[in-house]
Amino acid sequence: MLRADRWGRLRDGVRRCQLRRGAWYPVLRVGADSAVVVVRHQSVIVPPSYLEIVVTRPSKWSLIARERYAVCPNCAERVALGAVPERMRCGRCRGVFEVELEPELSAPH
Ligand SMILES: [Zn+2]
Image 1 (tube, rainbow, N blue to C red):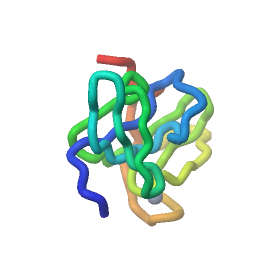
Image 2: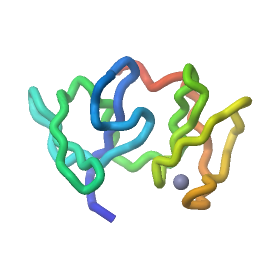
Image 3: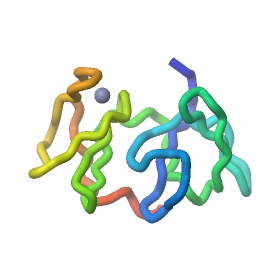
Image 4: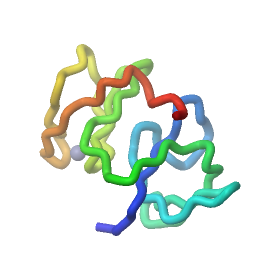
């Protein structure tokens, strides 16, 4: 497991990028006009404005409500959803995680 002290995911509305929506990636560096994230063992540079950044690895499913799927916080598996459960087991990594309450990726704050 790569040690990172920050984690980032794409904000809502960002398109055409190597990062998958809803998945968290280790953030190596954040500068004024570029951020470096690790995507499939490679460093990828994106504008920092593309990212929502947190300091601890999230443990909840990302909810992409508009497209009706959730993304596992552990392995980034995508799962299509009907009704949104409070918690859910991942069929790929077998982890059980709560589902975030936000209806979409969080707005900038
Ligand atoms: Zn998983």
